[in-house]
Length: 105
Image (cartoon, helix red, strand yellow):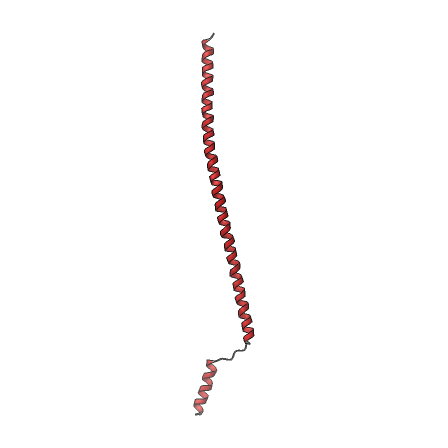
């Protein structure tokens, strides 16, 4: 019977080690740890949201400026065509004036 008692005493000591920290101190440490990682990931989440919004704003702005530049490019082509037509008209008028001057001595 003594052997049984001594065996059960060592077995129970191995199964349930004695903790030296108070439960309140452990709860405080675990709560503090949880609060720190929650704050860390909330900060990261807001940073990701800020970057996502920034990318969306920049993409929208870039598309706007690209469309505006394309419209300006098309307007430039139209104006260049008008200038070329007007230069041809001026050249035709100049040729006509020179030919009438040469014919009238």
